Length: 140
Length: 109
Figure 1 (cartoon, each protein chain N blue to C red):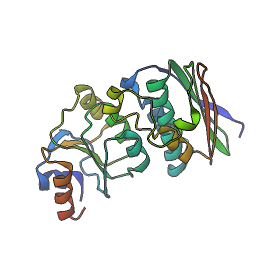
Figure 2 (figure 1 turned 90 degrees about the vertical axis):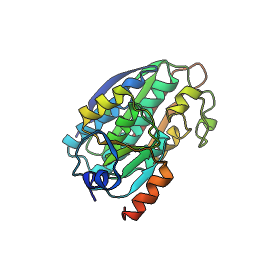
Figure 3 (figure 1 turned 90 degrees about the horizontal axis):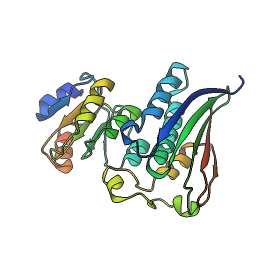
Figure 4 (figure 1 turned 30 degrees about the horizontal axis):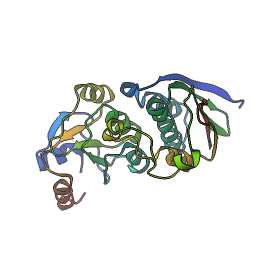
């Protein structure tokens, strides 16, 4: 099967009210497509973290999800401000989130680690003052 | 044990009644949502102090049997509305997480 775009959602900065909506919609969609529940779970966790990262850290962005017979690709692209220090961002517990966001149980410094853990492949293009594009792939 | 039996056994407050016949398979305790996303398993009881609407999204995504808010923490109206829409069991107790867990162990969960 040729790769096909199955979901495209714009995500606004600070839109906690809709946090989890993209990943919830995706979970339902993948269930309807008959994707194995463990694969669905992995893709959903990855998408949730990417979604919340856009809400918490970026100026806003978009998530696109592509599927083919062999893999699911989640593409998260935002308009900045970019990840200052990618190595630090991968350290468990490291976060630049403010106290208010942390009080809600976000910004625990687990997000990127979760994304890495549950993806088979992960590509990140970012830098200070730049847009960030993350592509996470889960093989079916 | 299912949610309905648990509510009766411990006198929990039912904030939102979802699928009350849902069988419980274990427990996860946590307030950090990324941790819960990664570690909570389907049909678990999720014990937390978080009462905002993103809790409903995480509960729905992880497929937990229900959420128990401990220490009578406030639950946002919007969270209640969303839980109704998504058919998620939201329960509450004045107990601390520790005391609640002691009781869950006594019940054999």
